[in-house]
Length: 464
Image (cartoon, rainbow, N blue to C red; front, side, top):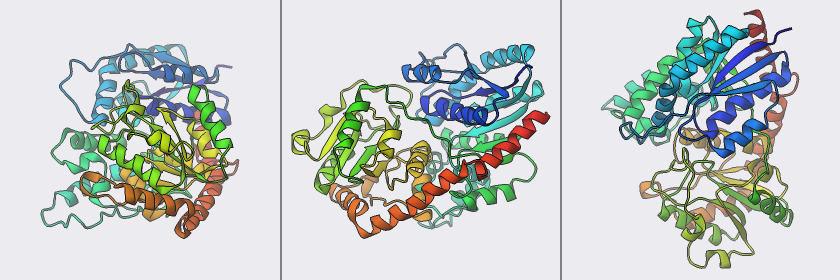
């Protein structure tokens, strides 16, 4: 019997390819009667990490590559989200061609697209397919999208007190500085594109969000109450990537962790694309040293653009930017590795007791799944929202205070690290995070909230 096909379209970048395919794997694990075909756009040559990942997928997921595009001839676009969206839009003719070809030779019932690939949603209507958006982020961010027109009014008001927290339905109140970067510049192209994406959400039949009821009950319930008709909001998480060690740093990290005391190590990483300024990089180094706590730090060469490593690999050796004598002085205290570490295994290791993180949503979910408390250090995208949620909403994080230009000083860093790793407040935070860890495990059990949600989706796909 011919398998029912689902077409998925990610947007460029490892951190957008992986989530939509991890979602696909989860769906196919539960419902093996489906087959997924992934139509993949890219900017320039396809990254080695993405190729390796695709080779690890089950045979029920096929890949089709559309011709890579170049952003060289495009006017300078400094906003990462706009770059990603633009790269997909330039690939749309190729995506449509491949989708039509797939529909001509297989029974395709649905199209699932990444949030930045929303331009492909129109093809679903043309080809009579169900259409879904996969948001690899929080229900809080989804709420921000749906509430954006009201937010626009609030932020544009001349009488508004800029220090007054902003209330998004069902979410913890946030300061305007923690809203995604486009909201800081209401006349910017990034803000205009955010509002456009918000309108496009209503074109889809449904939206999958990589969250779960027990993590974001307020936001999810508010969304399900407010979004009448379509799209239906489906919380399907936590979906995280299975750990891959296949890298020279992997064994070194885990061997070093094996020699440390339980819950004694602070893992420090800013994800696959985050970078610090040289000044902040230096303050962090001294702060870790001053704290006296064990640390495993994944370093990347400093850059004034916080997302500089996202669409292109850094080529400079990051070790040369560390303060003079740092490695010698901290030889027994910490391990510094360039660019990459096996994050899932590090967070799951018995010696890891804290995570200084940029609060990208993948990292947030991984810390929750492994029960590791967080020091939030948001850099770009919606990371400020995630940091506020962890710190003020869920109370599973300790956030450093920053001074001018968002700089956290070494003494403050040292103080927060010590408190999280061995202080009284740190113990309370650890207890709450352990509770969340159990809730995350329950959500994806056979009778869990997210598994039940996916069964609704499967029934809809079968009946189409």
